[in-house]
Image 1 (cartoon, one colour):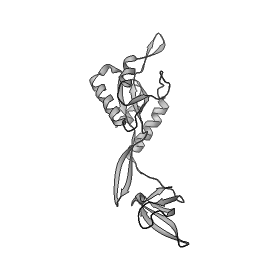
Image 2: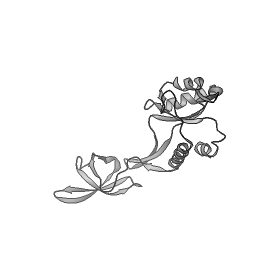
Image 3: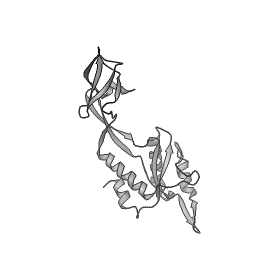
Image 4: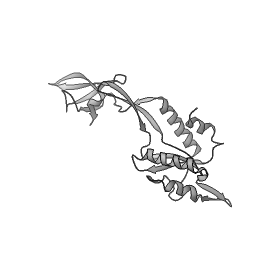
Length: 198
């Protein structure tokens, strides 16, 4: 059982709520690692878990299928924490948790609510975790073309020609286009990386 499944099954037992943090683009891993190190050092911080939702993507580069991971929400990470404490029936920001996160280099701020961030609802967390679990097991093509779409050839004998997508073979990483050559429709098979959207 992975973390995502535990989150939905044990949400009653877990402390804290999930919040979305806006980070500098490209610094998501650094921010996650910094928060994780702080969590391990400082157990009473009120911060319990941090994660970056990712998906597996595949592409064919020079005839070889390559699988890599891509961030599902670039520039954002999720953190489970106790950001508020109840004092006399009022929600008060837990300053220790607030500054614990705000002082991490690369964090721009919490998403939603300004100085009073709003946590994700239980429904939003369940939906998000379900999507992340589905993405963990499934490999999707890095670039998805549609039948009938017009694309431009960026490499090969027909460079700078435009063609209409007729067939897509995700297994082989190939795409078949119909090109107009000398006034005739001619089918041409290329690799995904040889074409681009206009």
